[in-house]
Length: 122
Image (cartoon, rainbow, N blue to C red; front, side, top):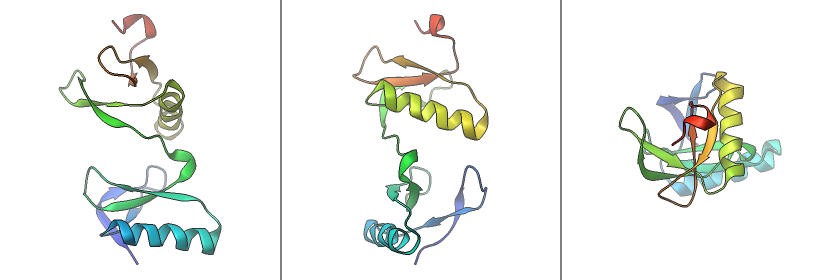
């Protein structure tokens, strides 16, 4: 059930993530983890490898790709609420020690993360 990824690794463990070929396999894995270990997980389709992975439910911070681009020309992630954006910023700080601020997108209905101070947003 699942195989070790060659391209995706855990942020904390640095070990390969378990990878599932289909959404159905990922759903089965979520149910197995819940019944065996009592852990609540979510499944998601990875943008990097295109396969499915699991994640602890408390790490869930849904986002979509926005039309806005960062300084390197990459599209930014858009979080639906300020609270979800702040949750993602806290996770990044805990895992990587990177302090991010949250600001409202001026083009879409949602929130972005930035390295800049709040007075530098616009």
